[in-house]
Length: 198
Image 1 (cartoon, rainbow, N blue to C red):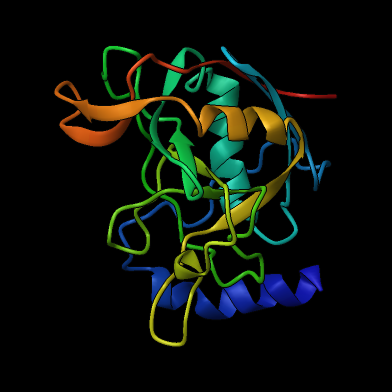
Image 2 (cartoon, one colour):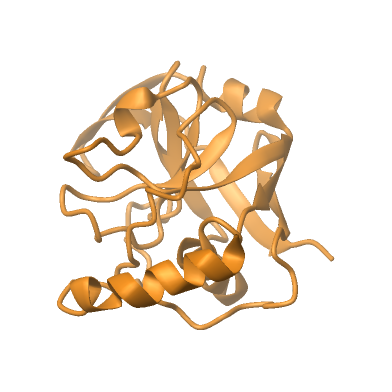
């Protein structure tokens, strides 16, 4: 299966050659296809297993940010009950963290935006995901790819701490002048650190 996926990527590579994205980030811990990631938050811990078999480029992209400490001390800046909890992009003062080039969209990998999965946030352009990720609080079919549209790349699932994700989803939110956005927690929820477990 994995070899067929590699062949498919090589076949599709010319189509992505002009895409404004980092198509294949360098391998990070290449010997571990399903690394476990510990998210320490101000509301408790979450453990996520990444799926590098289905989303290798996205997983490598996430892992390099994690190893650089780019997620440490960031906030969950978008919280929508029964939809998503999103973070990975901003410090508590809403300063954006340093970004790598966007990563290729792997939303057609067969993983769906179901409850308890982690996926990459992006802009309208399909290949525009950088550091921001979100946890799905519901089966969000609208975020999956269709026959005529790209979806949002799922690259792992929560193994432990879904109760923490749900607790974050209940915090009071509102409009933030600093971010010029709604659905922002009124009291910051901090992502203290993101580390790769042995």
